[in-house]
Length: 194
Image (cartoon, rainbow, N blue to C red; front, side, top):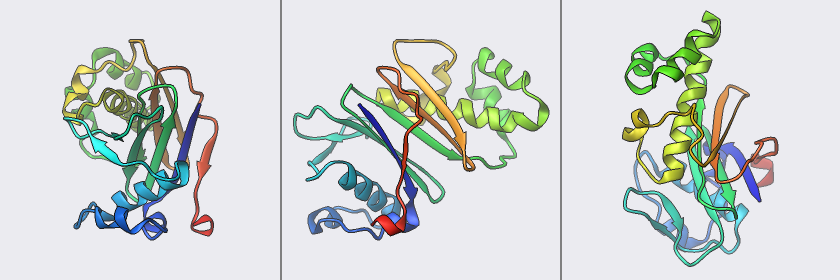
């Protein structure tokens, strides 16, 4: 079973949470996205188990659990992928202009990924860049790695995991899962549902 939730940080960060969860929220610029992620987790799993962090910072349920999750946010958008089939990774990025994207692709993408971009029409190349970027980041996050490992990932090769991507509503979304997941059932959480 996989479930994928999508919401807005600005709405979810004000959602209801247990006091002990709010007390652990960081201060500063990451507070709103941290709170929004916990609201999504509380919607998905209740009561919310204690969360621990792996060596490289990947969050997981602390107690022996048969559930795995991954969170991602970009701008005001936040996503949660929940699984009972093993470790997962997800990434979302707002489809936006990025002046230096060709240089990033040259330094972080393998030749096959760069070729995918060049095969696109010029007006589709930026979207292709974001599609590959989110795929690579979802793979890294599934492994529990950091963004600094993106250059070592080739998203065009099947390496014992499944990657699915989707571009919708101005977002590029990718998930990396241990079994196939078509990413066709997105649960959108709005402020009316809080």
